[in-house]
Length: 162
Image (cartoon, rainbow, N blue to C red; front, side, top):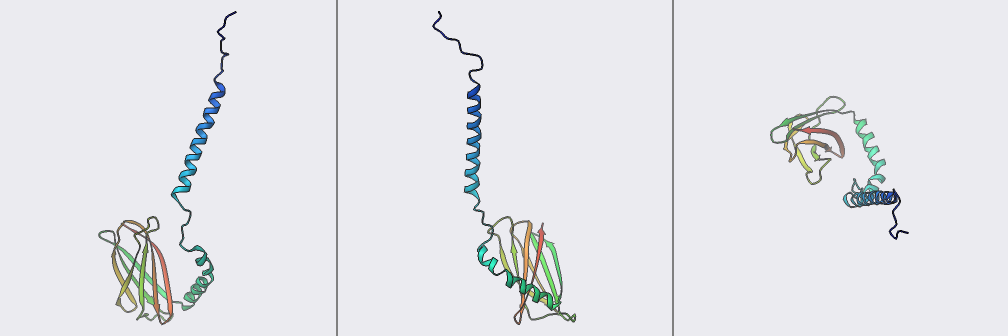
């Protein structure tokens, strides 16, 4: 009788399954680590407070709609990632709305740290304008906030800066 014992064919098949499961586990743990360590999941600052203020936001939108103003917003591209913004406000009777303080808030939706807020200068009857050179080209969210005698008026527009 021979002391050396021959291995059966296919003896290594179970090790293939164990190795395959180990690779799957390693990949899953790696992906779970990167998913938890790279993005906090918070995309809005103070979401609870903003949620509570939602009814006030709806009421402000109703008041704005009741004003029945006509607003003409022109955004033209300019050099160096620029945007020339001109907005004209007219009341329900068609008269220009003068004496307002108009601010523009430029927010880059895909990159933090590039937001800016500027005042628009009056350039004519009911018209306000600014020329802004933004740090990056691409998509920007622009919010125009006008106020006169406790009458706020806001316009939101997504613009593309070349």
